[in-house]
Image 1 (cartoon, rainbow, N blue to C red):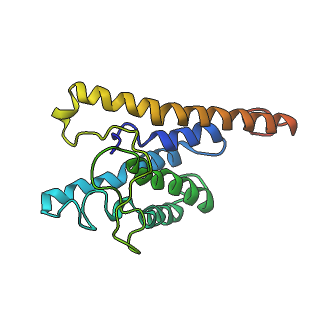
Image 2: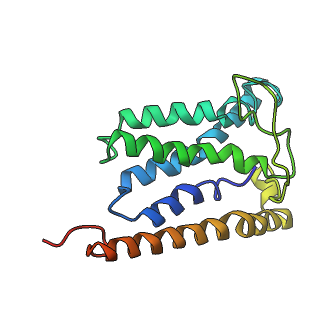
Length: 188
């Protein structure tokens, strides 16, 4: 799996690309939490739930259904996030769903249960370019941890930063063509 430092790149990049006028700080915070939420499944190990079980690591919590459920709950809390239900739903869905997809690009583990409950099959991406992160902090604070972070910078952080910059530039061009300031707010 990518580290807990990397999964928030998705909502951070979306917020950067869409701008402050579209994503409130509260919704962004909820998106960051939602992006790492699937990895709480590691507590299954403490309860003796096997890795390969549906409720095990990279099981149901890494599925698209789980992301949908997080988004539905988030949409119901949209007022708390200073947002609309539709925007909250889609932002939180897109913040959560890539967690499993990014994990599928790692070179370790048993794959992810992306389509649970329709199938318990675990999937990997066609290429596994992201170094799998060690589960323990002591193993992470080694040369292996540096290697993991470097692969995440190369394969996740830089592409998402480039996408965010491209979306932000496109947004500014569209706003400018409509005579709206770059902030997205109409002049007073």
